[in-house]
Length: 375
Image (cartoon, rainbow, N blue to C red):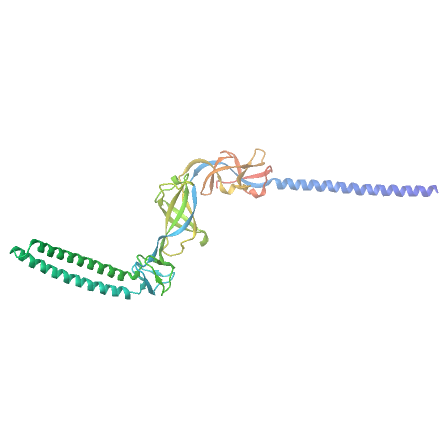
């Protein structure tokens, strides 16, 4: 009985020792794994990134303004007389030359009025001729004392009245002939038909636009400029115009007008940039961005634009500390241009920043700095 109890006790002790060994091994394995992970994290934290010192340089700011593209010339073409459109010879998109016939109105009524006016003119001239003969006759008789001065004055008045009637009839003929000529509507300048408002057979009133013609061989980019930027633009300056609708294609333009007076209450100025468009690749009505170089800012603290990191809508950089850790700082920036950003506050000249590999680091992380060149 005693032997059996001792045997059970020995087996229990063996089981306890075995369990203790398993637990101890598990604890050792966990500690070793944690050490390995900590070592691996240390290696990740000490990521190799490219750094460079902050310096001073000249920056040519690039001012960017949104703009709408409009034709350099556009006009509504209308008839100067009332009438029904007999012929409308153009469609939207047609290119027409100066003097080209756009529309012809019904002229039958006008033609009849011209004939009537010419007949009235002939009658007025006949009356004048008779009045002139009467005046000469009375003038001769008055010299002989055969007629009174009153009769001579009456003849003179009748002659002058007939002369006035001739002038009036001549004016009426000229007016109706002009209206007859205006029944043919022509293009005042070379351009393209951008809009047609009527069809043939429609009765139109004088002054009603029949078509709109525009010259798109040259376009105007009309931009709005803030009062703090107007001094950086000058008439005659060459700028770049980027059209997003054409895949971001850039065109060259020239500043041709700057408004001398600000628009209130926004206190902005209107600017016009002339863009040659002989090939017709740019379409009026498109949206564009105008990029204009401003006055050079000399010797300013500057960082590469590629070093900037966006954090909650603020521009930041990673500054390298003495113990090779990074500190993320928010910057106050001025102008940007040629890949550089002017720093007004946040870092100083001589400090070292991360210029490549920012995606590998976080604020407070250790790094392995690799010296980079001037970018």
